[in-house]
Length: 153
Image (cartoon, one colour):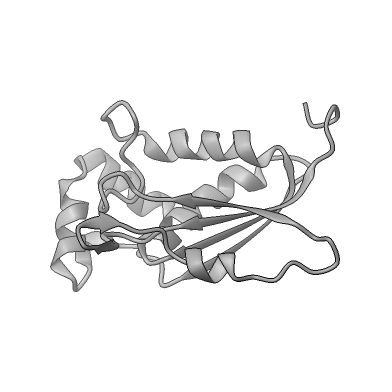
């Protein structure tokens, strides 16, 4: 697949944190900042913005209504990333935790460089000071809470 087409240069993936709601709507984090980047010397990049469907499931909730989101999103990211030479993953808070998880899907790929920049990842959300994050983590099924803790260490 990659041999037939020339790979694009860079994809920046921005993963939003939890409960980023203004006016009742979830928002893409870093969108304005990334859109204001200057393109120099013909270098180009594409951007992909991710939102957690629930705002508090740490991207574990999938399109089937079950908790297989990490694999689903990870595989979808691999399907997109195969067309790029370089991947930059950005995440804040819950988005940083997701960046930790999703980076492993990208680094498994050949011929793709990956850099992840994470700000304040939540590695134990059930004990977070902010009650809404702790509550969101406690809503996850017990086996997924254990998986979350084992995967995020």
